[in-house]
Image (cartoon, rainbow, N blue to C red; front, side, top):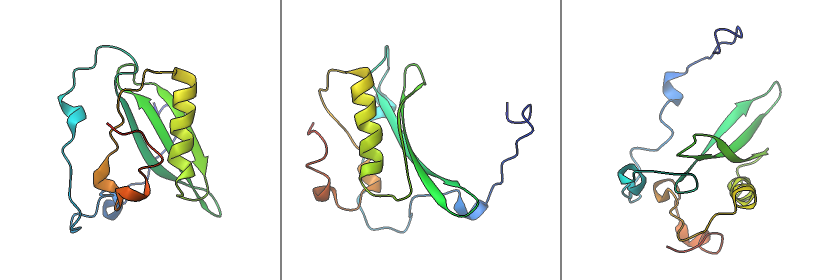
Length: 123
C-alpha cells in the first residue's frame, strides 16, 4: 500500500528493539496470547510510537480492537506523560462503552506500577 502511494520507510536496526533487554525489571506473562477473541471489545491492544516532524517529535498512543483490528482510540502529544495513553484509553472507553471486568496493562514496560494504580482499574 505504501509503495502505491510512493511512500518509503527508513529502518534503523539499532532502534528496532524498544524494550531494554538488560533491565532487571520483572517481565510478566502475556495472557492475551492465550485468548481466542470471538467478538469486539474482548481484547484491546495498545502501543505508543513516535512521529518525526521537521523540527520535533510527537508521540502517538493507539488502542486497537483485537477482533476487528480497527483503531478504537488514539491520542497525540508532544510528551510521553501519562495523559498520552490515558487520553487514548478514555477515548476508547467513551466511544465503545464496554463492560469493564478487568484491565491488564503491559507491566513489563512500566518501571513502577504503584504510580499508575490510581489511573487504571484492578483485575
